[in-house]
Image (cartoon, rainbow, N blue to C red; front, side):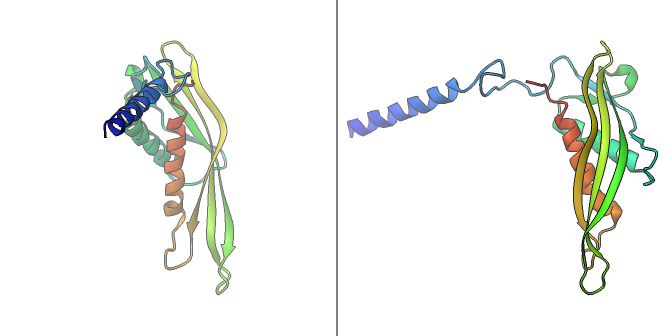
Length: 178
């Protein structure tokens, strides 16, 4: 019985030591409890995203801007504010929207499943120093939707997942580069 207790105590000590040994303060040497976001930045201004010359979808730039703002507020320690009060500025454009049919209904010959791809460019700039923190050109984000009954999603419904995924990926780039 005494041997079992000392064996369990040794196993518990080994578990604690191995978990502590895996932590690191610098973020490069293993696990870290430090924030994954950039220190010194507290606020972000988000300009309304623009549209490329061949993008004709109504209010798509407003939907993307709203999704990015919500995702910043939800997933980061940053606060979205006016440009005059912000530490940084995030600007972007929806350069293109591509849509293609993936499959057709065998009964009607109409499209059954479609794919939407947004191609976007954005820049995140420090307003205090003028430094560009992140710049991405022609980032592609795609999603699928079903056009056939009983689901019968239209472009607006089908693009909602793409807009949300786009916002998630933009906010991921705001993490500190380790």
